[in-house]
Image (cartoon, rainbow over all chains, first blue to last red):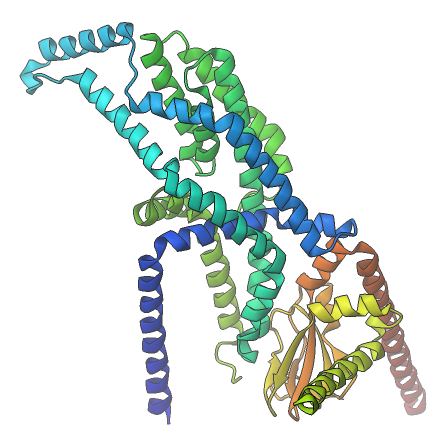
Length: 349
Length: 172
């Protein structure tokens, strides 16, 4: 009897694994669609409290969602008129590989210095200047191809808002449909997990979004005041990079410093940039973090680092952005399952 | 064809009436307007249990209350499964889980095939956010229900202590 039960359990595990592999393969095959759905779901999730707030003011769910949708459409419209041309121009300029004469001289003299003093290390004909120009053009191309090509703009601008709208409007229905297919035995536990995840990951994501927006705006302002070229795109990158723990805050400052050195051919503005980013960090820690309640998902820093590395390796920048919430999700599921299993694992159901 | 639609409609109407009647018997939902009751019905989960199926186990993480629409549920406690109560249509159990995070204090299982409505904490919190007026009504009724149960428990405790006191006097 026991052997029979064991073999049936094994069959279940094998079936589950096969189903999981098929699911992963299908998701990988339609990864572009999956990305769209994930981004839309996250946006809908972050905006959900806003819709609930409007509902508490007497609006129906549909009109609350429609109002938020219209507001963001208007905002996107204004941004596309004001911001997109600036962004487009800045990326085009980076793509063409801008470098000042003064900077060229500085890089060339550094190149000569290396070749003449470190020839014994085998350093010969470095062509630093052309390498830097190629690398910058590469970065410009990458940003252009990934974010600003016509196809992705149209797909993103049309599909994401539509998916977000329906996720926000019918999110509760989707949850009910999902819950209705859960067997009775796991029904309450599944809802318990969703509830726990909602508390931990929801607060984290909303906190991160708020923080990224404020850091982005502050970075744009600070770099504009200092007079760094391409202040807008660097500020946007600094805000977005802030979503990635540990690496984010340093990334924005590093890019700004490199650009300012290449722009001026010297380190005149480096100190200002460092001070500005330290101030932004302080404002973030003192003013923004207390607002972004319970930002932490209570994951060990080492686990955050590993999840960042794995996320980055598997799905690139999107993987790094999503790695911490996903790690939080896995932590909640594993933690709660282990607690329940330990308590009642050997009890007959 | 029309008769078929009429029958389907009647069946749905009958099911809705059945749920309405049960909900109106529950102190937590008594006195709600029909519009508020409709809102509540939209957030309830409806589940069907076979005979002898476990609804929740003692010690499980509890998330909310269960309302019996049809069938009988038995509440048992401990490894020996001492019976604490037998509940039927219109009864409810597990309401404390709406307020605290403590694990389930007993096991509930269906003694006969059951149709059960589930009202869970996340949905209650959502209602409080979206419709504070309705949320506060439910919370007030919930507090009232628990205070009523506390009064009954106090009466039982005092009755027991009186009995013990009388036994002691008799033995002296």
